[in-house]
Image (cartoon, rainbow, N blue to C red; front, side, top):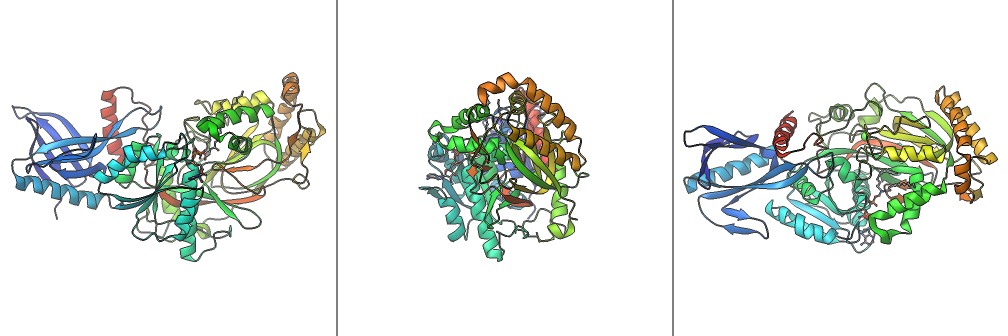
Length: 582
Ligand SMILES: CCCCCCCCCCCCC/C=C/[C@@H](O)[C@H](COP(=O)(O)O)NC(=O)CCCCCCCCCCCCCCC
Ligand SMILES: Nc1ncnc2c1ncn2[C@@H]1O[C@H](COP(=O)(O)OP(=O)(O)O)[C@@H](O)[C@H]1O
Ligand SMILES: [Ca+2]
């Protein structure tokens, strides 16, 4: 069927020339002298629904069934929601046709174009709501903001309000999932993590693969994941959509957007596996999570409170970190680029990760080639005392840190960024943390290193695990020994880091009076791992990044930083549409 169509249509008493070209639907106001006025251009892929009659969805759905009218719902962008990302809202236009025949032609052609140009639109979704996530508004957010949009788009959803932790994960591992196109969580990063574990586990079970084996190349998941943000950090949503907004996320789900995402598998010696996408953190972030669990009643503020408590306790930990660097010719964590919608680094990675696929974006292509074609590089080893060791598969931007833990990380390039913050004096560490809140480079500090990696191993020097408490502070022999270890190991690895470490020793002496106030209590010698908001029950780990293991209903961040007024907003809509065509 030829999807193109062109005719005059009316909105109220204004005449429009409407054109459907297959990829685009546009309407231009025509004045009495037949001159063109303003045009609105909407990619067919961003049409949310087409309905006969004059349809309203708010305050509730109502249809005035006239036989010459039809209503089109589409994605409309607006700035807001912070300096990055664009809010999406539901645009609506009600057209009148000259005849019923023409009206039926328009609705038929538009619906056929939708099917052809956005094949991943979901028809049936499995939705899990965590009623206790974030500010406990999950149910309300879903029923008032999301369900009416799904209904409009003709999506049928099976909704489960969870009654316990891990219910969503267990459901995905065991229950019949036939007929579902995607799975949605209404909650925070913890709920997303449940879906991630459930779907990855289920996919490996069905493929007959052992997910606990770090040597296995995992099979990508066939079902898409949608996130309706209703949690505390909502980092996965922020970093993949650019804003934390339930309506924006619902619209990405409706139009069947697709964003692949790298996932890190975290294995312990007894072969248990966990997955992480946003933050795998030892030291500071592990301690913040452990502390925050005691203060869940505070809601999202528990992290700020616990962050301050842990910061003031001034801890550092010994560790041995080994990493397998990614190809430095492809990208670097300090190249000042940002992974935005249509990212070319990620697109090239798709071709590299799935070389035998005719459609380079296909989920179903062989994923096994990934490691056989990659030449295994050399592992690098460092040992010493760290304030924190963090690994992230993406930028991990969130409201607390709008550019994230690693601002130049990519969502789907098959690598992660390893951030090593060596022990330093308290003010230095505060500077590091504080830089996350602005555009200042948190890696441009002498005690910070960042590496783009494919795999990481971590262990605690022998004897430390059993040692329950130790003296801490810049003056104990423990720290001096740790400091020496660090200088030795790093210089063995031929890095310039040892110079910085030496400089740090004198900085630490300068900070002596400040430290005295803080460090007069005992502290544990071993921290815990924070795996996307969950405490891991093991310290020694092996991690591997699996490129594009899952897909989200998202498209990456649309850069809205330049948009300040409504005229620029229209321009932005145009630029975003042009970018989406590239
Ligand atoms: C001085 C200000 C310092 C601001 C430092 C901000 C760094 C923020 C990096 C955030 C990375 C987030 C990665 C996401 C992790 C989530 O998967 C995970 C689970 O989220 P969920 O509960 O929503 O399910 N979230 C977390 O683990 C939370 C980590 C949050 C860390 C916040 C740290 C706040 C630090 C405040 C320090 C204050 C020092 C004050 C000195 C007097
Ligand atoms: N019904 C429930 N009761 C208790 N815990 C739950 C329930 N449903 C989910 N959880 C757990 O709650 C934790 C936090 O959920 P999340 O939605 O991420 O909120 P937040 O962002 O506030 O931490 C997750 O680890 C999840 O496994
Ligand atoms: Ca990545």
